[in-house]
Structures are given as structure tokens and as C-alpha cells.
Length: 80
Image (cartoon, rainbow, N blue to C red):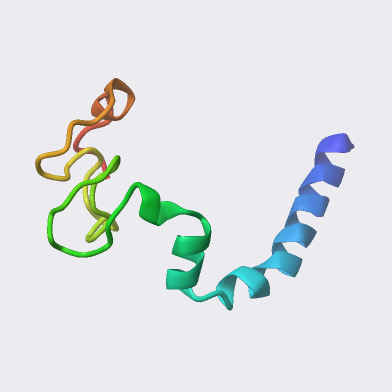
């Protein structure tokens, strides 16, 4: 019973929050989340603490050239 109540509450929250997230400008959200501290978005190949996120969608895990990944990510290297 508790699991069902939790699932209903989570689904309701998702429906209520979806327009807020969907209507947010991606660049603004990227800056608000402080993602620019660790990542670039351009194709320059520059690295910060993390690799460039250019082309990350569809790229295999731990596959950005020239970046040393953690042991945890290397364990999944090559998967998509």
C-alpha cells in the first residue's frame, strides 16, 4: 500500500513539475546548475574537471578523447 501511495505521489509530482522543467532554457539551466564549472559545451576538445559535453548524447561511456575517467566509469567503458 505504501509503495502504491509513493508511486502515485511521484507520478503526480512529475506531472506538476514537467511544464516547469520543459519550459526552462537549457543554457540558463546549465549555468544555474553550475555545470560550466566542470564542463565545456563546445567542440574545442578543451577539458575542465570533466570532459566537454559536446556530442555526449549517444557517445559511449568514458569515450571522450584525452580524458582520464574514474575507475567507476571505466568499468562501463564503451557501453551506450
